[in-house]
Length: 277
Image: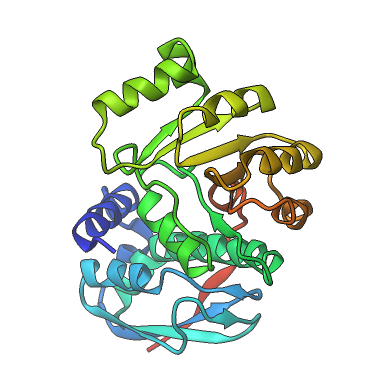
């Protein structure tokens, strides 16, 4: 985790919530006291983002955290997974921002775990995408890893992925691949997205490293894998869900990517309760 960048994001989130102060807390806590509050799971899931949660209170100051679990652990409804103690003002003012990060990251890790469980017994790797919440990518991709997934590109500089609009912009598959080979660093693998078997056959002529089979049904995927026949690594993508991922894996692909991990997750319900002096 790049904590310089992470702290900047956390500070912006705190600024969003506290720019004009915390009227309620400041009205009640005229004489500030030290207190503690429990961090409690309100449903079962996989926890992720504990250190991000902790950083909220480090940045605010005058509070410390203690955890009874670690990122990646299974947690259960009603379980006390940690506590925060220190200035009551800090506890009250930092609560929502800290939980926002932790709940979302834990939700992503929980959903990712559900997907990876479906892939047990196979050699297929589950990949995330760049379909992330703006400015939250670092946290969300970290949560995917905690849930057992593998990160695809973090940003556009991480690898070559020629998609449909790139092909249109270049004037065709051959032109797009030739332009990349001429202008991109030679150490980069080349991945290309294809939507039909005709496009696949054309792409294979140019010895690309990875073929992304986009939005293909199971029978078409099977046919594509047979055509590729080990000439490139294979990624399947598009409309992947918990109901069809096992069938996709059985077609013989190497990777399955889905944006659902970071755009269709449900937050894991967590709460800070039982504040006491």
